[in-house]
Image (cartoon, rainbow, N blue to C red; front, side, top):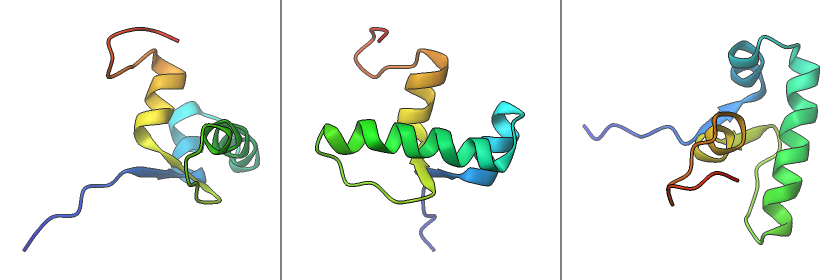
Length: 67
């Protein structure tokens, strides 16, 4: 069987990762999804791409630079 690679965090996962409430994680997800949407990306309510989360919270970037 092919293993499906997970590419999104849920609000519950963001809450656990950051040690914040689920309602606060939803607010953060809305904010970051709004940023993605203005850049032309399709977003899913209540979910956040793992790659974008890592870039915004840990300075991770595939281009090697920081934002």
